[in-house]
Length: 296
Image (cartoon, rainbow, N blue to C red; front, side, top):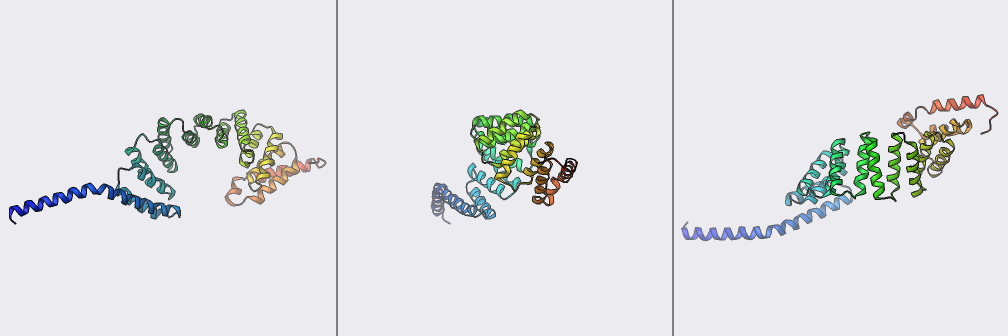
């Protein structure tokens, strides 16, 4: 090939490459948006495998966008693939370390994968970046609770409740941590606040009744346990502790009725968890036989 033609061809190729380089970012962005739209369509119908495929293509088209890695991590999480979720969230934190939500998502993925210490450390990083986010404090309380570090769980739940005073769930979780520390007065106080905020929540009424039962205040225990059953009578644990409160008060016939309800409502593994119910039932029957004239 003559030299002048070679130089002309080289100039044309360089011009084409330059033009391609200038246009490719916009084209790549359009491609990314197409993949994200398709992924969103599959997410809406909970077809996570297909969504993951399109999110992978979006990552390949724009590997430096932390939001895509974060969305991929969330989708892996929904699909129960926690290790892969961790990898995606880690990449998001590397690309944008100052974004607290990515550290929070990473913490949750670690927690779901059974890596509590890493979950705590990632969540602490999220709190460092955004100390006013109540959900981060709540999650930290959850992780500490699961790690049986109840003092630290109390501190985290208290901070969450301070940041969001109207959240009944935070008060309830705080009460559960206090129960583990056997601080029943604070547990009762926390559960009472939860009930005040959400009086129609059967679980909060149950927890308050349970705390009163542990504190041996059986009148109040019965009051709130009966309320929880009025709201949701299908939970055997509610009837179980109501029966135990009646038993402690010597109201044997009512105790028997409660324990029979427990047996009727529970089966299989749940019945095994309530294994002492037959013992309590026998104790109530014995008490009734020994005090036949007692009117319950």
